[in-house]
Amino acid sequence: MWEPRKNHGGQRVLLTAFIVLFLPCSIAFGQVPDVCRQLLMAVAPEWNSQRATLQAYHRDDKNDPWRAVFPADRPVLLGRKGLAWGRGAFSPPNDKLPRKSEKDGRAPAGIFSLGALLGYAPAAPKGTRWPYIQVGPYDAWIDDPKLPYYNEHVRVNPRQIPDWFESQKMRLGDKAYTWLLEIRHNTDPPRPGSGSAIFFHVRRGPDWPSIGCTTMTLEDLERIIVWLRPEARPHYALLPREIYEKLRNEWKLP
Picture 1 (spheres, helix red, strand yellow):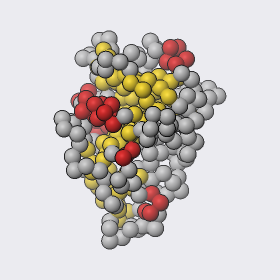
Picture 2 (cartoon, rainbow, N blue to C red):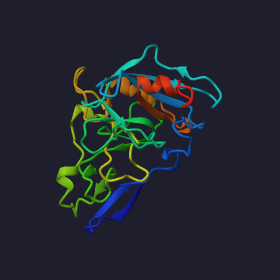
Picture 3 (cartoon, helix red, strand yellow):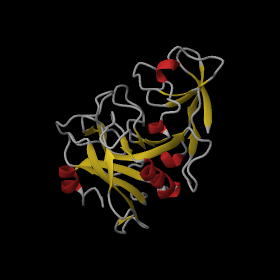
């Protein structure tokens, strides 16, 4: 649903108001929440990797083992400079490894809830149960830390278009952004400069890394979108293999 508010310049905008199921749970350090029944798990070879493999998992109860959904792990592409700790459903450890920052070219590592699905089409792929927002000519996602509503989706009033809109508007007609599934990094609340606009989206090519998103083939992304169930409280975990193997049991990962 949409809630009208004013930005600092007095322009009327419409902000996405996410329902409660999108809010991250209060969990122990690094662990997958007990309420989570669907998990997307991606593992990269190391911190500077541009590639990872992803598998979807399901469980019926918090004490059940995770069960793989795909017959085989799926290849995904990450940031061109690899990974850095992100701000998601838990606080990263107090180590000296890099933290995600705006335009650093790194994908956020950690565990994250999922936000809205956005796209150009009038409707989401057939069979989708995940909330969907159609992107139009007045939609923007703010990636400038100096602007109000940093790392938020806004829809401006076409009769009062703010000066910043042209540099922040969402692209129309770009095949890579056919579907955008938000990875809720740096959202609760956003910290200016800690990274914004992190999504699952379609890859531009098999050897073309992103600037921080997790990308894949259109077919794989649509399969994930249709598979997601809001009541299963799905999350996304992305880690380098060394961290994954070290913390797999403690963090309740597959």
